[in-house]
Figure 1 (cartoon, rainbow, N blue to C red):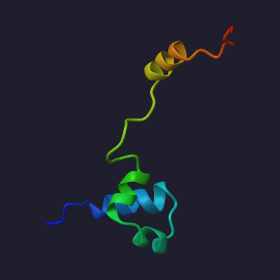
Figure 2 (figure 1 turned 90 degrees about the vertical axis):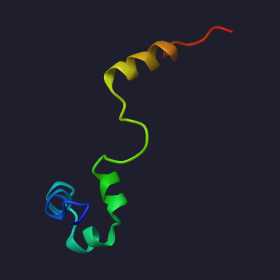
Figure 3 (figure 1 turned 135 degrees about the vertical axis):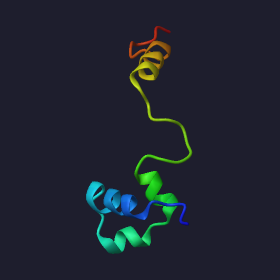
Length: 64
């Protein structure tokens, strides 16, 4: 049994990412999953985190 749902990955790669078949098959599963937004790494920036960063690092000039 395969660990990957190849039909779903092919749909996502060819239809969602608009990859050509040769481009799709040249990718490793890890590269494809990364392009689809899966895998390790920090989560995407959401509004709450953006607001937190804006408070910590405001775009106002600092007085010297």
